[in-house]
Length: 271
Image (cartoon, one colour):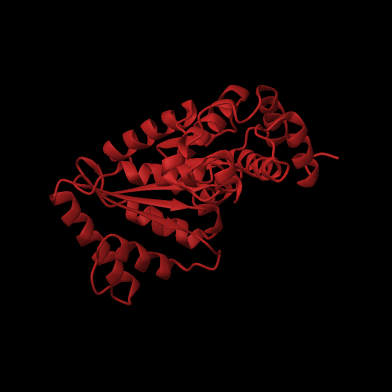
C-alpha cells in the first residue's frame, strides 16, 4: 500500500511533472492565455512570458499548445535544454517542426525553405506558432538576429510566424542583445506567484482531480503551506506531496499542521 490507496486517490495529486489534467486556471493564467491567443490570432509576431522558477511557465506553454487546434494552427513547442545551441541548429529545428521535408544544410537555403513553408501555412488559412521554453538559455546575439529575420516575413495581415518566448527574468537581458527584436515584443506577460486564496484553490483543485472528496488537508494547514512556498506552485507541490507521504507513514487520516511543520523541517525550509 502507498499513500494513494491509503487516501483513496486515483493518482498523485502533487507531481511536478507537467500534466494538463491538473492545470489550474488561476486568474493570472486565464488572463495570460487570453492575451497570448490574441497575439497569435492578430499575428503580432512576438509575445513574451517571464516568471521566476516554479511559477508555471512550462505549464502555461503546454496549455497554450493544447488550445491551438491543428485545423487553424501549425503549432509546435521547443524546450531549450542547453545553452550551446547554434543559430544553424535552431533554424533547422524550426524548419523540421514547421513540417519542412528534406531540410537543406546551407543556412540561406533553410531560411528559404522556412519562408516557403510559412507561405503554404498562410495560404491554408492557418497560423504558424512556435512556442519556445527556457529562452534565456539562448544567450546569443546571432540567434536573436535570426528570430528578427523570421519576424520580418509578413503579409498584409501581419507576421507569418508567431513566436511565444517563455523564460526566467534573465530573458530580458537576452532580448536586449538585439534591440530591434526587443522592440518587436507585442505582448509581455509576467507571471507572479499565487496569493493565499489561489494557493488554497490550487491545492483543493489538484486533490479533486486526483479523486479526493474534501477535507484531506486541515483548514489551518493552508496558510502555513502558503507562507513557506511563497505561493510558488512547484514548492506547493513539493510540500503537499511530502506531507501526504508523512501522513501515510503516520497513518493519519487527515494532514494536520503538525505534519506540515515536520515536512518543512525535513525539506530544510524551516529550522
